[in-house]
Amino acid sequence: MCLIAFSYQQHPSYDFIFIANRDEFYGRPTRPAQFWEDHHSLLAGKDLKEGGTWMGITERGRFSALTNYRNPSTRKEDAPSRGHLVLDYLKGGNPPELYLRRLHPKADKYNGFNLLVGAPGNLMYYSNKSNQATALDAGLYGLSNDVLDTSWPKTKQAKQQLSAVIQQDEDSIDKDALFEILQNEKQAADDQLPDTGIPKELERAVSPIFIKTEKYGTRSSTIVLISKEGEVTFEERRYKKEAPRLRTVTGMSSGLKSKYTLHP
Image 1 (tube, helix red, strand yellow):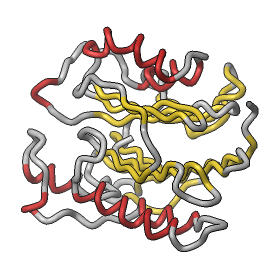
Image 2 (cartoon, rainbow, N blue to C red):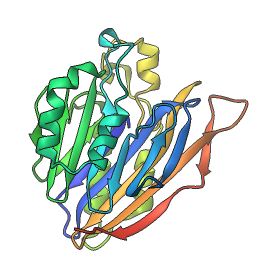
Image 3 (cartoon, helix red, strand yellow):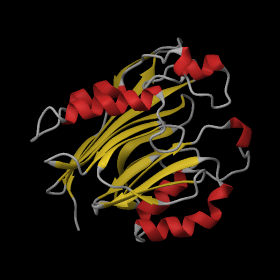
Image 4 (spheres, rainbow, N blue to C red):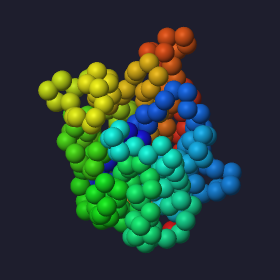
């Protein structure tokens, strides 16, 4: 994931309202979100290159999502895949606090990351840049390629628009409106761009909520809703580029829609 915004324990009907875009190289092989054959309760996409995932949820409500921390100067070429941090939590049984405590001593082996792990009523955040596990209170949060709630233009915009959507109705959520937030291609003004160590032209190109470049861009959008009754709505929309014009990412390929109730 490269952009996440979520509302936690704020809405009268939903304890968790999560929206996210996964940005990746177009050539990286990926399996759409589905229940995994070898872990039947796990709903997630799969990185077919390294075997991990960027976000997922189980039928018991274990949830995890990850974004990369962008700083080319600190990149390790031989680092393990960060996608296994998400997968290991989802497949395991340890509570979030214990999982993060055991992760901490080896976190520096990985390239920079931000990690959300939790279950209903217990959501935590950890980054190997801040090296501190934080239990999240009720609130509205945004996360991109810096630490939690860094006020980049796209995270600020996503949070503002998510807040507007969830305030429209106390009983339901407009899912189409959530996906519209994730499809915003507006670039940030140059004086608002962060400085993450990449060329300014590239910084500008990856500044929108929905990214389109020649070789890299938004591959999928996902929303997750968890009602107060434990009903989970998980929807993924996957995007494809028109060949041979690599700059064009158009339309929506067939996406997953899943709804189920958590099993405590």
